[in-house]
Length: 265
Image (cartoon, rainbow, N blue to C red; front, side):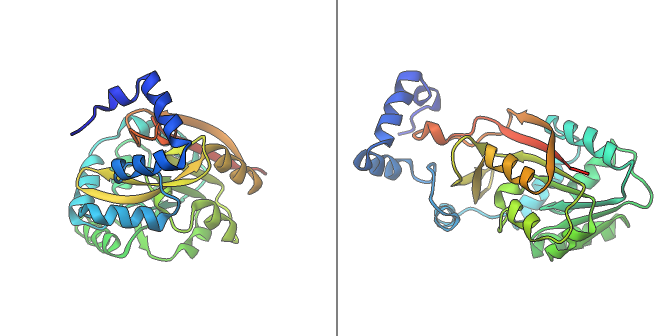
């Protein structure tokens, strides 16, 4: 039996669910009943739950094709990125697209931006996805795109673009930046689930894939970037993306986020 989310979201019902969550015995039964739609303590636990669903993962060819198709035109959440990225491209020619699939954002954004002829747009992703990206770029005779499988290339960019991928990264983005000898001048984060709670993990079921993800605390991301020498220049909400846990209302993310950071001089 499926219980409508609209019913579970009602104020009294949500309050009752919060009460159940505060007690070990009732929370145990809630977790069992909720299946994969619940918070997990580690990425590994979430990954095991995602595997049990039996769907594909990030490197599935159908997932690559889906994202490429989505990139045929800009979505509403792309426009803040386009605005900020165009500003950055007036001062740099080096972009690193972290978790950039087959370069689908480049193919989309070049329709809207004034792309410099000497731009280098570097994509980092998983091995099979990178192979597909190289093949696509070759077929399209695209020379601005590069594909890498090592994150030491973080040191070779001025703009770090992390769109729809921050919550999958291992290690987390803040750790990657801490480990880098060079910090990009700008960091653009888009389409990421962030919470008011301390970090937890979840299963994101999207179309034909089920994958584990991390939900970080918004304030921790802001303070972490501040400690690394960045100012939060802009932020936006993305209401068409969410991560709903019907039986755990305090862990649901009603709207994804976008953040734009600029390094302090």
